[in-house]
Length: 309
Ligand code: IRO
Image (cartoon, rainbow, N blue to C red; front, side, top):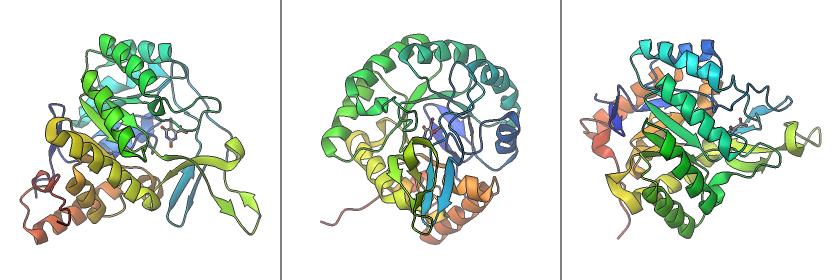
């Protein structure tokens, strides 16, 4: 079964990859993704300096998903800029996730990444877990200003990692911004920010940072993720590729993301829970499903979701 895809002119052996943040901080983790059946290697979102991140516990899986408040633990731009050229030996695209604590950070990161030469850059406008730093993607003007400046520096095609939106007017507004800055692709959604998971036995929150508030991922966010993918597909069609992220546990979840309009999917919670073997399993399950339904390739079902007349 042909599970290959193309994002912004870059060919992927298959459309399954890690979500930034999931098992992709260290050299060892990145190499394990390289050696796995993942169709790409996505780095952890990076900042100018190395960061330890927030205090633990900061990631907890629960029935239905996960909550995290990692707080951007990463090795810093210079370390990733050094690692990226060596990751090319795995013969699959390398996507660098670019973050920052202030706008100038993103520009410094863009310069460092031009030198390092990943295949694509994913600009993260949606980290929900830095105390005092709102998610940039919820401020449309700030997002546009930042992406314009990043675009003046980056010589590599770049996309954007968006937070979930919950109103059609917000989908319309972010789509207009992204068209104006000529974005090459969109990854959506980041975790559903500032959720709260409660342990009723201990009468306590389950993660330490921010009083227990953190980003939700996994099965419970799939309908939100699918809605966001579909909303942008309805606006753009196949003009700007979408990488669907949220709630991918089985091949059928990948299929649903593609039906809604995704050209690839990322896996977060399930990768953390299952390890890199998840990609081979998902590829097998997806191939079986597509075969049974008579599709010749995964891209053949992209956007084919039917509405009820
Ligand atoms: O806390 C994190 O490091 C984190 C980031 I940068 C993000 O974009 N999304 C998320 O759920 N966690």
